[in-house]
Each structure stands twice: as C-alpha cells, then as structure tokens.
Length: 361
Image (cartoon, rainbow, N blue to C red):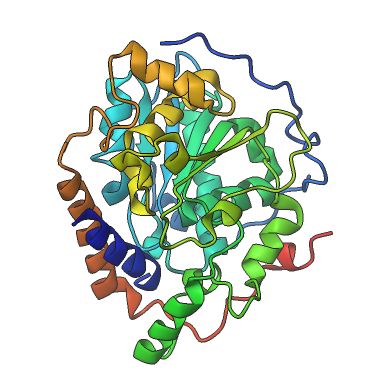
C-alpha cells in the first residue's frame, strides 16, 4: 500500500510537478573548496517578492548556541508545510532542536534559478534570527539543487551555513524526467520549468544542471547526502545524489539508507520515505549536533542511547505516527498543486540561464 501511494506521489511530485560532538573540519569556505566561485551573483527578484515567502519557525530559533537550528527547503510541487511540519519538525523539536522550513513560490515548479534566490534570502533570514550564528540546512529532492545553487553562486552565504544534509538529492538530474515531460507535453503542450531543469533527455543534461556542476559538483560546506536505492523519481539515484569532487577532506558523506537498514522495512526506501523514516532522522540529528558530516555509527549510537530503533519505519516524535497518514499529507498537497499550479506553470523550453550562470568562468 505504501509503495503504491508513494509511487503515485513520486510521479505527480515531478510531473505535477546526546553524544560527544566530533570536531568539525577546519576549512575556509570562501576559497578552500577547489575552484569554487568567489563572487556573489545579482538577484532578479525584489525584496518585496522575497518577503512574501518568510521563514516558518513553529518553535522559534535559538540564539544561545550553534548546533541547535535547522532550515528545511521543500521539493518540487510540494510545500514545506506538507513536507516537514508533521514529521521532522516535531521530531527534531522533541530532541531539543529548533527546526524551521519555508514554502516556495509556485511550489518550486517555476524557474529553479529564481527559487534558488529565495533560498539565499532565507539563509540570510535564518542566520539573522539565530543571532548571526551558522545553522544546518537540509532539502528534499529539488530543494537540494536549490541549496547547492545558492551556495555555489552566492559564496558569501557559505559562512552562514554550518553544514548541509541532502535527502534524495538530484545534483546530476534524473533520467526519469524525460518520461514525465513526455506525459506533460501530451497533456498541456508544455512542461513545468523546474521539471525541465532537472530532466536528462536522451542522455543530454539540462542547462541548469550543467551550470550548477561546472563549479558546484563538490561540497561547498560539510555535506551529507542520504538516499534510498528504491527511489523512483531520481535515477540513477546513487550517481545523481553524489558530489564527485571533494577537495576538502572529511567534507562529504554519501550514505545509502537501504544498505544501512537492509532486511528491514525501513531499508525499502523510495523517494518520499526519506522524509519519514528513522535512519534519515538520526543521521540528521547527528549532523546538527556535530556541525559536520553525518556518521552512520554515531547516528546508530544516538538511537541506541535513547532506546530507539534506528531502522524504524517512522521518525520518533512525529505528530502523526501513522505512516499512511503522513504519506497522505504530502499526497493531498501534490493533488492540490496539480489542480492549482501545474497547468499554469508550463513552458515549451528550458528557461534561459541567468547571465551570471551562463557566463561563469
């Protein structure tokens, strides 16, 4: 039942769209990451447009110390509210953290370059609310390429981000996107801009992905990427969720959740379930606490210390402990997006790259 619901969600989401902290790597995030960009790009949106999509912090933000705050960025065709508010947000608060999330314009279906600009401004807002202290950031699916684009083209924001945890990331796009676009174009004579920008068509990358990976195919802050082998949206998931270049030691961790919980239900991880399952949650907790990359053994010990099952099907502390109901929450959001947004957010071609991206050195 879960797989059927989750699979339909996946198609719609892209078509309709206490342990001792380990020391953080000592790095210079302005110039220590290989050939990373060093000059901030300009914005295309106004301050009023950015202000229309503020942070949502149900429990406030801690100004007392680092290793307490986290900001979540949502995926294609879903809001932050539906993606995080009943799962990771209450679960992390129960662990003493202060989680925030955002909702994006057009449910992240429009030009991903513009969505990424909102991430930059949301990083600024979170940093200010945290008393000018860096924080953890995390995204699901497209939310990850929006985060990576923001850190890549606005390098001054890297010092505001303590570390970054990606859930089902598609840094290299997805080959399944071409099938989705074929269905979209047959139905509405176009495709959602953000879907086009993530879709590998006949082996050719979209311009957005190529522009991102010219300098951004590397961790720009300490980065952990979590994925499940049964991901039915991002394919090939083990490749697409990986950052290939790691010029700074101990700056990237690539963790297969399916292998971590092999033989358990939680090991059968598709695209949606990285938002719901305990192993991803405990790795998030470990990353927030240490301020660096997540470690599988440390995360297992965190769960063990609290007498929790590391490979449970559901995050401990979620407001709705029914996995079916949590899936339904996101499912209903996608149906709403499909009705209200999808038909109007279409284009025949990929949005042109912004000059700063098209002309990058």
